[in-house]
Length: 254
Image 1 (cartoon, helix red, strand yellow):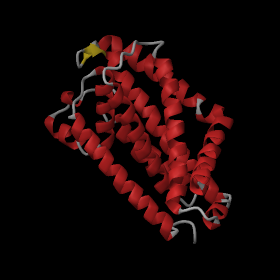
Image 2 (cartoon, one colour; image 1 turned 60 degrees about the vertical axis):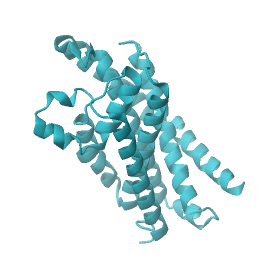
Image 3 (cartoon, rainbow, N blue to C red; image 1 turned 90 degrees about the vertical axis):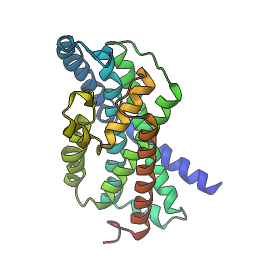
Image 4 (cartoon, one colour; image 1 turned 45 degrees about the horizontal axis):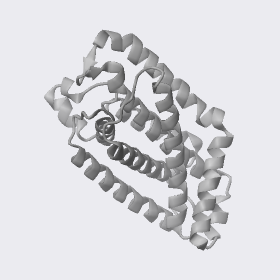
């Protein structure tokens, strides 16, 4: 019971934090994704025509929604946990009788909450530009949750190592953003030369976007079973590593 109260408290604090500063956490993604729909969907999409048997706007909508989810799940945990380190109130949590795995779960759950919240907002925005008919609801929901978990864990690990706010921005700028744009959000990898198709297979975002697109549209460049296996394996590896860093006190006891 005490563990549940601790987890619920952490989650509630995280949710209240990003809701309290909604002009910084919820509004910018909605505006950015609206611009994606206008520029890529309306202006460029009208010249591209169909892709994967769908109107281009319909085709990119799942990718844009997934992009919003993973970016915000990552950003929430990275900024929140590093702020706790920077302001030194993480020490109060570490000396409390709360298991480390529960601390990790609380921050990750907060990242998931923001990711799903923003994903819902972007989904509502997308309805102004295109219609959405979900083909496989279970796959759609499970993939968006698993993706949010994976990138929330990534944000936690980034925050563990970061020694300044600048280091929080390095991973999203130089790694996360390129992987997102090269992850099949705006195109099918079948359009790429064979070499680059093979290179794309090392990008985990490709599996997330395609499995999510399959759940919504019923089409995918990747086998859905393979996508789930890879994402779950990454979550197990990242959660184990994050818990190892937390138990070791990396970046906390310098």
